[in-house]
Length: 311
Image (cartoon, rainbow, N blue to C red; front, side, top):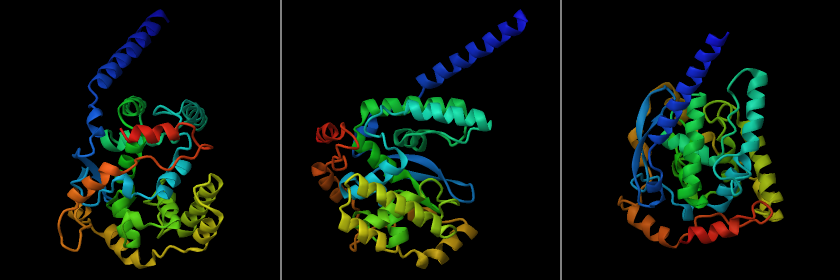
């Protein structure tokens, strides 16, 4: 028995040493604070193949925070991470509930990831469901909260989330589904895209489960109304609006049946002149306020965040 306990102790010690070394070798997150920062990550298409994806203003679909509607930001925050402005990268209570659920179900299905954790995973980690990856995710999320403003984290998150077959980022999603820039999205369209985030490939694919997506977007609109993001008139108008996504069915079917051309991802959105948008984006970013408009009942930290984003 003592020998068994000794081997268990050695195994635990070796694993903790491995975790410590792995965390020490994690990439720096400080450079993400630079609005001009660009990097290339790997994203996966619906056939399981990996492709290069540009993170930063060199991606023509990149949408700086000032051009993302406040309703889009708040739709994501209220639906995915209501404590976003209160936590330091991870939600301890949510993690405890997830561990309890996973132990009961004997699985690793519930992750309890915050928006910051999801951003860290999308930028630096794989999608494997392991304890080691989760620890790395939490560590990176904590470091991101120390180095970046909340507004910058939301900006990064919304520019790398998956919204369809080789559709990554809110800029590409707005063009793909509604043929418009992200800045022109209506509250209903914002809620519609936010509703897809838990599972755009199947569970919340609007072409397979449109009713489910609309139902969840209605729930998100109610949250936006309850928290004061939308007035009553805006709320009723949003409920009455029906997103026109039917025209995209053929395009989606084609993408599912054959490997997509990823080059379109970073070059689809151009001005009528065909010139890059980078200089225009940089000018707008100089005066933008990265944080969504403050809502005291959601987060007492929001007004302070607004000041931090102006630094």
